[in-house]
Length: 484
Ligand SMILES: Cc1ncc(COP(=O)(O)O)c(C=O)c1O
Image (cartoon, rainbow, N blue to C red; front, side, top):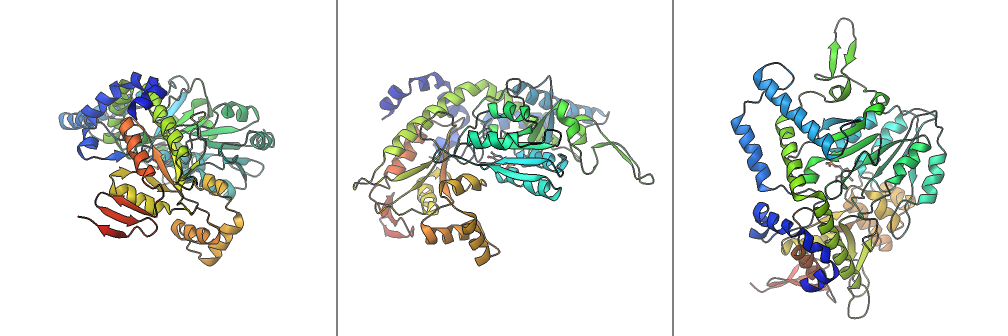
């Protein structure tokens, strides 16, 4: 099968250095027989990143930054070096400001709470957005801005260009209007056209590009695409450190953000008696309290690692794996001819990234509960992701889940959770708001894709499935026969 894969994807061979990298830096994967397929959930770190960071921490005396002592200056140097490295990575040194945050969500919250939403203005969201973007609507609504959603097409779950255009031209260009969409969907892997950034700007919108799921396997050049705001999390790009993300703001747009408060580290001057404060200029006005400075020092190490691996090579490799897996999964059929798999989003590699999201169906055409599939995959050492991935829109569109479904769910149980809602709608109409997501990244190889394909193919004709020595009932996931 590997030969057949190479015949179809000869460019995969140009990424052979990533096999060497996996052997040297991610040996724990093969040592533990682990098939890691959740790079959109979290990237994996290389061993050398941790070693280099540990060496830095053990050799240097690092104090709280931003004062003149040697221990403080050393830290300030590391933080500012990381900031420079981030701006260089995104080709943004000339006209963007990098604000360190806790994660992409922290970056999004800065925009949500500081953007001047007001009556007459608008927040336009893609129906395909992470909940950390969807949640911005609460700030907009509270301040009287109109909130609307740009819908998705079926079945590819791309932004509907005509409807988006119609929504974009509705804006009053003298008001504050914000359009927020993801460069890559964390649900379907769809890459929404980056040309929408300029189109929206021409219609009087500021644009927030959520790049969290895009940048681990794609180059983002902020000279070519120039949104006002960009959100990322570094652990998604290179696994380590966690707890650090970034908001990139076009420096010319920084003045549009009005911070609702000040905190230690963000003001140049604050008095008690005078009840006045003067916010620091630039990124300092947004970095509340003491930065996560030890972890930030590991960001530059991570970026160097990604540069050495080559973001273009990573992209080539993961797209070969995605194309191959998609083509194999759509071919899977039960003996009675019924398809085994439904893919959410495009079934070719055009305009998409390295995420494959699906549900399985049994020979009678009944949906197999994704939680069962996750448990069965876990039995085979496969780590994948299930649920709605904090991005409810694409699943709702694909399954035609209506507002009525949701209202009925909330009426039946005001403390509704996703699993309860799933149970309800599955019983009401065989719909599923959740799915199974496989995603590739820096250390992925053809064997990972193949192992998942074999696992999927193992569900053919099955109402039962054998994993190792044991046989499971797929629906209940109960062991029917334990051969050990
Ligand atoms: C597209 C997208 N945006 C935002 C986020 C939020 O990232 P974090 O949880 O690191 O804040 C995620 C996380 O999965 C994501 O995939």
